[in-house]
Amino acid sequence: MKLKSILSAAIFTGLFSTAGIAGTITSQDDNVVVGYWHNWCDGRGYQGGNAPCVELKTVNPQYNVVNISFMKVYDIAEGRIPTFKLDPTIALSEAEFIAQIDTLNSQGRSVLIALGGADAHIELTRGDEDALAAEIIRLTDLYGFDGLDIDLEQAAITAKDNQFVIPAALKMVKEHYRKTGDNFMITMAPEFPYLTANGAYTPYLTELDGYYDFINPQFYNQGGDGLWIEGVGWIAQNNDALKEEFIYYIADSLINGTRNYHKIPHDKLVFGLPSNIDAAATGYIQDPQDLYKAFDRLKAQGQPLRGVMTWSVNWDMGTDAANNSYNQQFIKDYGNFIHNQLPPVTDMTPTLSGIVDTRVELDSHFDPLIGITAKDYQGNDITADVTVSGSVNTNQVGDYLLTYSVSSDDETTNQPRKITVYEILPAFTGITDTTVVIDSEFDPMQGVSASHPTQGDLTANITVTGEVDTNVVGVYELTYQLFYGQDNQQNMTDKRIVTVVTDAVSDDDWQVGSTYVKDDKVTHNGATWTAQWWTKGEEPGTTGEWGVWR
Image 1: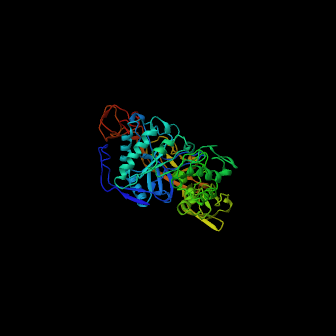
Image 2 (image 1 turned 45 degrees about the vertical axis):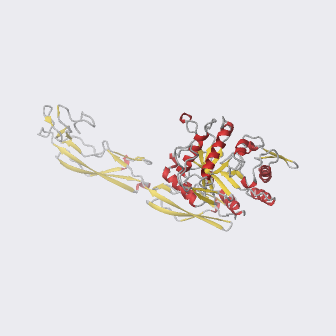
């Protein structure tokens, strides 16, 4: 590992109006595990899984190179020089993003910006070299990037003058940082069919020979592409039965420049793989032993590879179609092996899935095992072995703690779960204070109802206590009681004031020819009304909900 500091600002060969900002570039001299980081949130996988957005600081520390995806042309109307824009859905501010890159650097880890991607729209023409180099330096100094990874795919590889402009610009950038003692890292991620002797990536490899740090080809998503080996036959990239042979022979061909492949030195070749079956259509290694054995064969012939790359850290931290976590299995399988050149110790801990804190309605049914599954370390279903300690009383509001346990291969997993029993209360309608005229009829249930979101209409469960004597002027109180819940064991109450008034005209009665101002009160048709503003001749009860009389 080399940590190299930019000691002073410098103008880049007189081509740029701003000086390099003093900072630190972290480059890698030893083995690498490279992981790509998504500058977006969520993404559906090839098998229906999901890759969440993650913060850089949560990326497993055994990924000592993290590539930020992507630097690209976001809108061709803004120009053809690619740039980088932090996606706001990541929920990181620019300052937080920069701080997290600095944190990874402080751990001796490199953060590169990846140029390209499937929707890059990069089509540069001769003369763009200076502008591209300037933008790379600007982004590097702004965010603290430690290098750039060329990740052009398909048409973008040969579009316009990309094969000339990009290497030329990167040479300028490399030399710019060399002047201050820094090694700006240059890497590439070509799809392996483009690495033949006259393949589309040859101009990048030849022009940047002596400048690039390593190449991490994509050995996935290429279906039946592969190579012919005497005595073995055709070995396709998607042939799981010959995975060890494919890894060994394709690497051997590249590091020796044989079988019509362009030569990449063994200490600059990093083997690119998908993190799981959702990250790529093909190329996932079902048995890590295939890679261990192939790498050991290369090491035995004196040509050990530099490491492994994966698409992507987000998929390594993602979930499958059933929402089961991939549990960072890629880095568990290959992190220690690459950094220590020893196969990792197998983690035989069983896993539990479906355990999430849950809210349960009062008096409803709750089964603590519904939706819960368990697997042993080999992926075998051991759900039947799950035990639950603790209990939930669905007849009592409150929080309850359950602990789920499962054991396999002398390993036990325990996981807590909080169950909240909550109550949804019913609601009365129509219970309002009322004025009635003496000797008129009054039904205490007229216009009154009760309902519950799940139990429906509960009006029939209302009882009324108290009486109103409409033959006697006075103020009467009624109490409404509603019974609800399982076996109607719960109840709630509300009160209502009923005022019986004389029908004789009094000073309080509304008069059509009288003038009323705000807050004047009158009685009319057995009800009391309050004026909201100046009025005359407007009859209470006819002006609507938002009218003058309320």
